[in-house]
Image 1 (cartoon, rainbow, N blue to C red):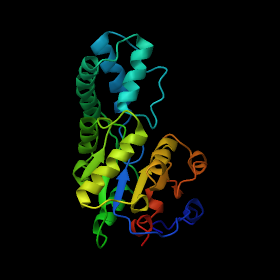
Image 2 (cartoon, rainbow, N blue to C red):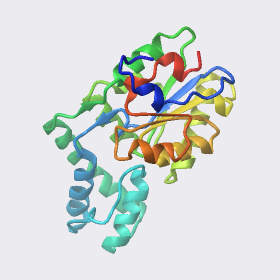
Image 3 (cartoon, one colour):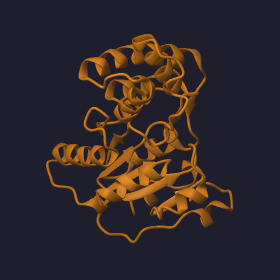
Image 4 (tube, rainbow, N blue to C red):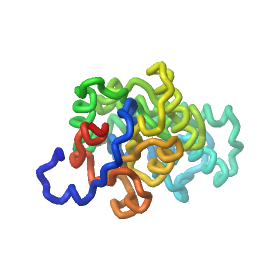
Length: 245
């Protein structure tokens, strides 16, 4: 294992090897990076700026959600029509506010993230690295560019693809198949995320799932979802282990 800490071994259960991993899909918030709440703050400010309604995020749970589903819920609470025009207006404000928060805070990548990305890319016949996130694509790009990570990824599934996270996973897998010019089997894909919803959407496409407790969910709650691996952070698993090598 990558860490010399004697405790991680008990936190990891390895899946049976079955086929080579060709695509590794990462969630963003709580998995790759902490933005200091830039997205949540920007959502509230954008809704007030676009529609004059404050505290629109007060009743909303953000963890594991998609940007489009969050906007729909805020519209319901705020009495705003969830039209394509209103959504476009909201997200234009959102991107402006998220940029300002990303510029202002000192967020960054979680322990083990950069090392794991480096080591995955260095494997012989390395897997394609992609994203599977509830962020809109442009929001994802701005968050990851702020921490120098955007160019690490070849493709992704985003909220632009679908409001339902399970269907974003389907889109990401399809993009991976198209990129590799072959139909990927579920066990050729690993989905890495920090919430039960990440585990669920990975299972929806038959992928192996790696749950990491760097976001809001506890390790106990993640284990209860029965992922293939559950770890405290990404220092506790090597690239070779993730890819079954």
